[in-house]
Image (tube, rainbow, N blue to C red; front, side, top):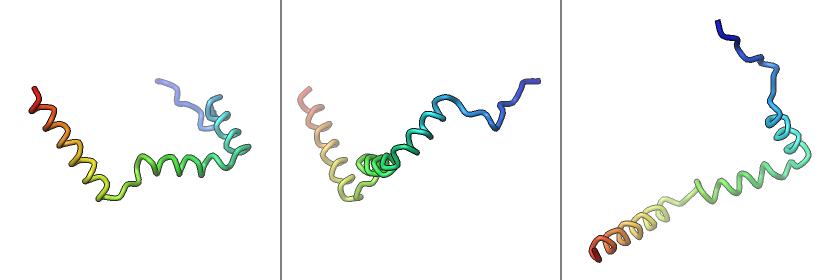
Length: 64
């Protein structure tokens, strides 16, 4: 029977991240701001970008 990991065990990486966030609490807010750049978009902006991408693809295909 395989051994299950201990619930009390934390890896060195996890310990580092917890200590870092404890020493630099502003990083959580910076992370949120950075995620907004990638994920929080206005639906109209997304539609416009898709339209531009589709037009670019269409023009590329016509050139060939």
